[in-house]
Length: 192
Image (cartoon, rainbow, N blue to C red; front, side):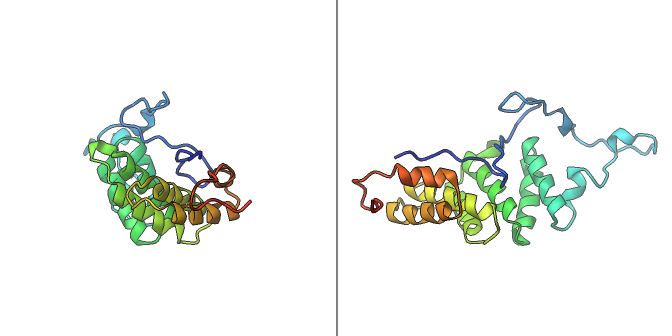
């Protein structure tokens, strides 16, 4: 059986790498991340102003689509303290994308933390049942994968198959391919 790797975090299918330095995992330039904010009393020091488009500003704002996106930017730049603060408030407000982004960070042990497979699986499960188009479909695939592999949840092929089927029903090509390749000897094998 072919269990596909996490296809990405964004509903658009974009691959996401949580970078830890000025050069990302795929060699991309992360200089847009800047450095620590250095406040100045000089009004002409615009290079160090915390404006409404910065992660520093977003950390203190209520959850919104723009603020939640700043969490992704913070994670991409290696600032997981800010990213988790933003993700947590966005998750509390019901932003499913933040659930997926944080789940990926937890699964990978981003920021030097130990991987939290149970926390990641729970966030993915919550996203899977959210009903939010795009993210829910991707989350169903990820939750099926976690169940099949026993990553953060007890291994359960029958439940995994049900989640793969749910994602396939919504048109997810990875789930469709996984079901097509499901081993005939599996107790949860499809009827052909």
